[in-house]
Amino acid sequence: MFFLLKTYIILRKYERFFMYKKVTAVLVLGIIFSVAITLIANGVNEETNTLYKIGKKVVISNGKYEMTMDVEQFIPCVLMAQLDVDSPIELLKAQAVVIRTYILYSMGSKEKIKAQELGLPYCTYAQMRERWYEDYRRKHAATGWGMFYNLTDFGKTKVYDEKMACIHKVMEKTKGRVLKYQGKIILPLFHRISNGQTRAGESALGSDYRYLKSITCDKDEQEDEFLSVRYFTLEEFLKKLSENGIVIYKDKEEKYDGKNSDVHEFISMMDLSNVDENGYQLWVRLGDTKVNGDVFREALGLRSTSMKIEEYEQGIRITTKGDGHGFGMSLSFARSLAENGANWGDILRKFYDCVIVDY
Image (cartoon, helix red, strand yellow):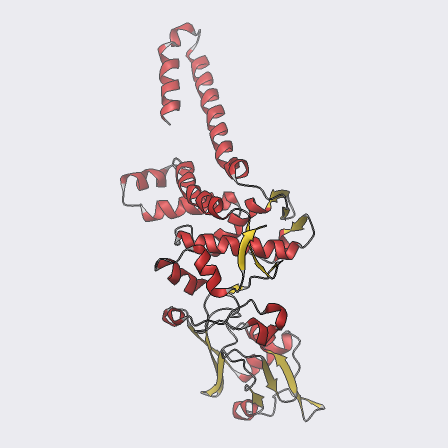
């Protein structure tokens, strides 16, 4: 802004050298517009010019455009869709390594992968810019700068640059680092909140996943979203299962539709005894139909497979603990560890039996 103001003053000073004042106005506007575009372009492209590059690519496409960026440039896009930029920096570093490891595990020997194939939520740098700016304007609405920013778009680049400085620190400290077990990149599963314990990968998924450790996450139980309660009528419950391809059979042949049954009878047909040592549902038996715990959770829109199902006021009440599948890193407990002084390497080794090495 100072540069633009100075340019305007100089041009006004020498206005007499121009034949018409209109010429001055046009030139001023032209110079200001040119400089502004240059500054904006530099701000937008900063991340592509300064971030370390690993050589493998992620392709982003929304139907209207397609853009290819290095994996290192894509990691902040995923990181900012999962965590806030003001999260503890050691948590951000740990999750950046998890994201990189997950992407490279998914790519295997491929040099390029579509973002949609990864199944990870992400936001663009333009979206980060808008979100950070709106957050700043909202939080500082009562201050002089906040009021000024609310009336103009000035400061957008300033706020963006300040936030990106944190992202650059995260990426610089962890560049190229991945998690490996016995010389191979692992599948670094993670979730928002555990049920108080993370799940042992070997017992639930097989020996190939023994690097996923079972640990106690006592702080997770203090999260506001630790417990979730959902209510269903019997009709709603059966409809959601049916919509997700789950058909219930009774007496091995008869298809169960629930039309001539009540909730008490239906719940008596359920078997929820098949859980792992950490309290997560492996299978749910409905009459003669056996349903995988995660399939059951997704069909009903539940947060976790750590669940309790009971009859409640002529309906069904399901109480779940935690948020997510429970494998690997609990982001909630990782945050607690970071807030209590753990560095990003210690956090990762807490959840994964692995080494942290250069890719």
